Image 1: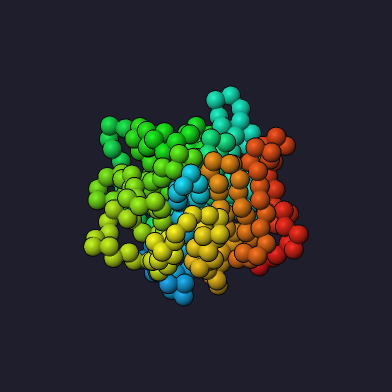
Image 2: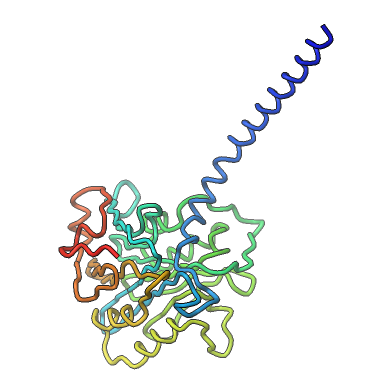
Length: 308
């Protein structure tokens, strides 16, 4: 009888412990999911903030935004050795804008444009030292999806980031441009959230915190290469941005898997796959959104179907 009682007590304790663990797991799950939605993209989102050469840095990304003579363009190289890329079209509904989103089969939100002419992408970073503001709530969700769905201008994006804490800024910065020609990069530097603007007609973003830079010593070969091209340009056109993306593309473990140029006024996207800048697919966002919500392999738009 004593043996039975002891076994009963042990089994009861084990059962209670198991139930407690299950409850804690269920309670924690939403928080983990939210964190994954916010931070998950930065694991492969254009990192290489310190090791700046293609040989020493496994991943990289380049963004250039420019406005001149009525033309507003934004271009990006998406770099990761994972060529399974996708494009997602989400038509407008309710209070949400229509949008196109580019990414991977395992992380489909990497950047895009909405039907208001707003562009957003991202550069991942080494830890920035981000700290939350105790007087603000913490945002839980996909930053890029929400921005593209609810913001039309850079000022809208600025207001969005001023309302909440964004843990994503611990490992990422977000370049943004709109159809008026305004651009900025949202980042965390010098102990606070910064909205970095450019004092020239173009703005470049790679994988370092611009607000921490001193004396113009930009610690990124891709940034310096892009700046040389843009600063010497007489005119802005798609060819100029394509040249920047071609000169800053990466090989090896930092493979450039697609490159986009967005015309923010016309709603056009020039898409280049796997560093092949001779073949371009031009997407008209308005026309694509009329076809309904869908996600497609990016390679399906190309005749040559490059694979690596």
